[in-house]
Length: 372
Image 1 (tube, rainbow, N blue to C red):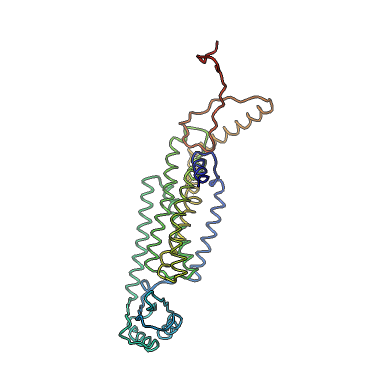
Image 2: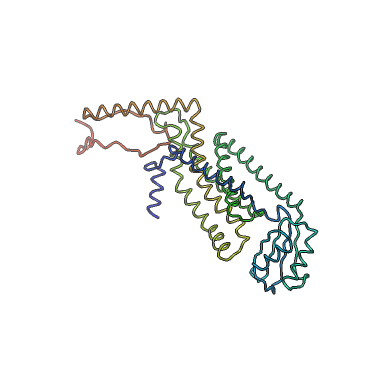
């Protein structure tokens, strides 16, 4: 852990770092590939919508039910003519969920189930959801998601600038598409818990992105007044300075979610936990990735198109070429270069280590330190 802390401090000071912005085309390509796979999965398999969104019925049996989950699932599908989802609850009762049926046929299905399970029909508790109500819930969920995205874009445009708002919006759409696509590929049921999970991970993703953007905004003040660093250099420094923090917060958040998904949902068979835990797990990982590899490099791309930033880049590259040429000349002559650079406060964003000049040891041994 001490090595990780040391690495984080060195990243923050700019002593070490990885050039995320320079390799942005690689990250864009990876994201596009994953997004295409998610869209294909969504188009081919579709989402397994719960009864809250498409209507249906839920039948809860008493504790004394002796039928197994597979038997109850077979009975329910034969009685309804639709796919059924059966879960064994902790008290030994069964929860039988049948989506897409008309509420008027619920009583007949209930009686048929009671005969197959050899229990009294009055002991089966039926919860009915009409298709119109389910459609209303689905529309409200989409409206809530749309309002959230609009408010996020407005906030970022006011707090930062429109380019950062666009980049954050692209990152959020990226996270939503991947999460929904994985839901389609895995086949997990989409419930209101899934919507809650989606909204939660969007908040986490936005948090990581805003942390990097805030660092970038602070370090690009008066950037055009110097000729040492381009906007992309400063953007890369902002990612590296917040990298360890983003990774730590993501890992800490993923650990309990992984417990819900793999232990609660997988080992213990608590299927209802899967609704929210899968969206949280996938979304948190995708959000951390997009804030580092998508949002900030995209902001750098947009900013570098500004005339002021184009001019700055030309000046920086020209100065670097001049310095390289001067360095080669001095190396050939065996000399040492001495020059005055801009003041330190002219470029608060420093990419790379700051090397202090070596002491000349002048005046050592003299009380006043002055030459005679």
